[in-house]
Length: 187
Figure 1: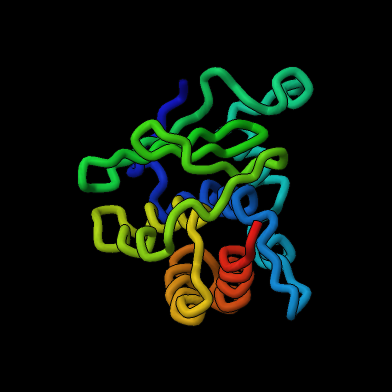
Figure 2: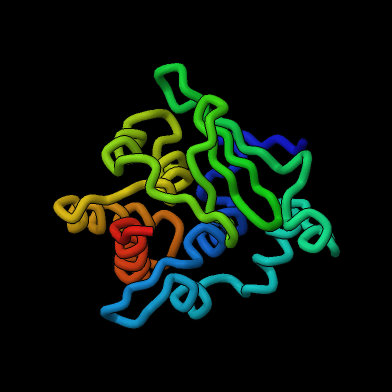
C-alpha cells in the first residue's frame, strides 16, 4: 500500500488538488448556468494530460486495471489523517474509485458504479476548518457532505473563499456554485 499523509498534500501540490477536484467533482453541475466544474477546470487549469498522468501515477493506474478489477487495487494509495477527537480519516485512491473511511467504517465513495455521497453533515465538515490542516481536511471530506437548503448561500461563500487558495480567483465563484449544487441535490 502506498501511504500518503496530510502533510504530503499541501496547497502547493497543484497536481494533487487539480486531479482530486477533477475526480471527486466530476458530476458537479450548475443546471441554472448549464456549467460543470469540469468545464471550468478544462478552461482555466493545468493541461488535462499533465494532471491525468500525475493522477495515474498517484492512483497506481495501469493498463488493464479497469478490465481486470473494475479499477480497484488490493493495495491502493491511501491517505490517512487525524480528524481530531480520536477519529482517523482514510481515503483510498483507486484507479476507478475513491473510497472514504472514518475509523475504518466506509462513509462513501465517488466512483462511477456505486456512488455514495452526502454521508456527513456540512456542519461537521465545516468544523474541520478549526483543526490542524483544517483546510485540506475540509476539501478532502467536502465531497461527502450534505448541505441543507438553508446552509447553501453561506456554504457557497465559504467554499468560494477557500477555493482561492487553489485556483484562479476568477473561477472560484462558478466552481463553488457547481459544488454547492452537487451537495444540495438528492442522489
